[in-house]
Amino acid sequence: MTPWEIDALELANCNCAFGCPCQFNAPPTDGTCEAAVGFIISKGHYGDVNLDGVKFGMTAKWPAAIHMGNGTIQLIVDAGASPEQRAAVEAIGTGGDTEDMATFFWVFDKMAPNRLETLFKPIDLAVDLEGRTGHVNIPGVFDLKAEPIRNPVTGAEHRARINLPNGFEYRQAEVASGTTTTSGDISLTKNHGTHAHICRVYMTGKGVINHAA
Image (cartoon, rainbow, N blue to C red):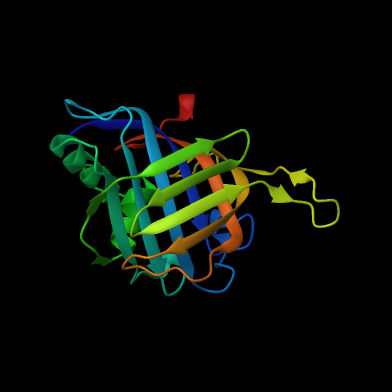
């Protein structure tokens, strides 16, 4: 396998209630899973290919819980990436060069047999981990916005985190409120003021890197 490593920030929005039951091995809020995700790699490589600064995203949809399978997924890589970087991100994002069950990319790939063609489009992405804000805009595919959860009585910002010591996506995530509108082949219709998380994705093909996550 080609060795790889990425240290990235991720912004994800799904259709579940804040906290997302999937993070706790529970069924999704309404029985289905619909998600849009954006990543920006601060430092990374795939073999000899430098991935610093590369952005990518995905949309995914499952008719039931993810582990039930039959999902549809589409990867989008920033149009500014070189051909070598595009191929590298496509390999990583589709679970290639990864040990079985080591990363969520691998799991998503195996649980989504209906994979659509990878797109190469401009990606406008900004993430503030501490502020629990961010956006991902990919023309013709999706527009995702995240903001802090608000106290329903006072309107004050509410802060919550998820810690997963053995997670295959992250070790700690800030929880936010996200909304996604779609215009691509995968239509997400339930992601309005629903669960979002912002986290550091630091991993190799063997899984999350514990000492630095």
